[in-house]
Amino acid sequence: MQHKNILIVDDEKVIGEELAEFLSSLDFPCFAVTSVDEALEVIDADPDITLILTDMRMPGKSGTDLIRTLQAVPDRTFEYVIISGHLDAAQELEGIDQDSVTLMRKPIDVGALIDYVDALSLNP
Image (cartoon, rainbow, N blue to C red; front, top):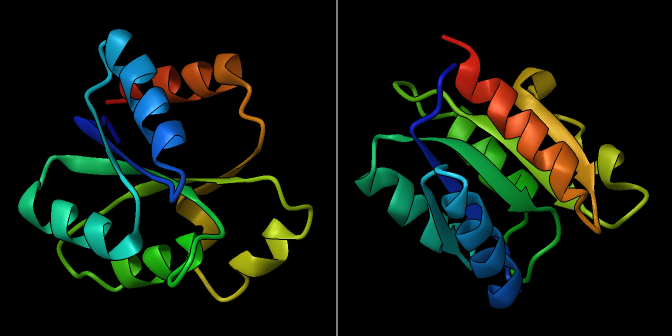
């Protein structure tokens, strides 16, 4: 899937904004939000968002909650990068379709993230 817009979801506002600014500087259009509810509003308003980078654990709803909700949307397809510093993060993905989910550990290896996003944008 070729991605048009990327949404970053992280309850730590500075992390999300800095990551969005960094990826935007490399010509990857990004938006950053701080909660699942805010993410759902932005996604609903922007049909060009197809790649979601989300923190796993956030107050209230988690990155897994976001993925479950979006996987139930009938007319949209997304790819997901879950960003987590927790060693048991893979266990929290149980019960969701993991074909479109990639897990990256914190602290983020920005080189690996750039390679990943760049590879996705090259796929037709």
